[in-house]
Image (cartoon, rainbow over all chains, first blue to last red):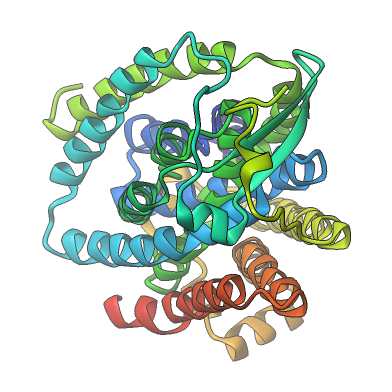
Length: 284
Length: 141
């Protein structure tokens, strides 16, 4: 394949990844990694390294907009990074060591299972617009984990407070491990913690997840970069497309309803999860 | 309207807020890091393809072109020589470092506001990020 065609194809893949990643809090690597592995035959850690770079781009692109628009909760995001970052470092180190042991296919199957496992939770919450009956726990009160934003879709000021911070910390640690290990943002796990345990509005969860993903991905990318698994000739075209797609998504999200965001997410994850498992077990 | 609970946030003993300039500065850090990185990556890709007109995707997938540029000395030498691979490496480093700078700025604002717990959390995150980048990566290589 001609190198310019390669750049163009990866750039288009990045646009799709950035658009979906910015809207759903997914990060976009779940699009880039399977395309690199299934479409171009890249090895798992190299694809994971490129995936983490696209997450960093999505996070910075959307962060610049969502932080300014008060959709990102800075305090909550930065507090829970205490759980995601050590998880990501452990996960990325494990990926390098497992690859040394030639367990690439096992990693692919595990990634596919992780992707499919998030679908039931998303289906259960598909009709929820805003959570109700939230009681902030003691840690939330002590640290002031509360906020408000203006919802463009409903033209209302929405106030919120974080609820169960302890289980959320556990899920965030797991999200960090998954992120570092598989090169994905594990945004769905972060959104799960923010949405299900902390009971934040979905759009705040999505924006804060995108914000946090940059730091989680930096932790994992640092390990993979130093270990030699970040190839910029693969990551750069995808990153450029991702920036364009994520910018478009960040302009769209404030005007969307939470239900719409969930409906975009579910089929994408189902297809990619199934495809990755098939690849891992050696089927075309 | 209150999304979570009409009285939830008003029941809290206080409502801490980061100063507005913290929000502006962090948004600026993210935007600046992104733009610099994308410019370097775009320039590096264009220069690489121009220098390797007969290059193939198979070669790209089989090699790690930045292996010689992961040390500060190697990177500086490559940039001085105008190496496309070194420019690409710098672009990758900028996008990796951008959120780390954002965490450092969070530490500054929490420390300035006298929020000891949050400043310790952000400092710990910052140290862990540097540990992963500078120590663990080379160790597991």
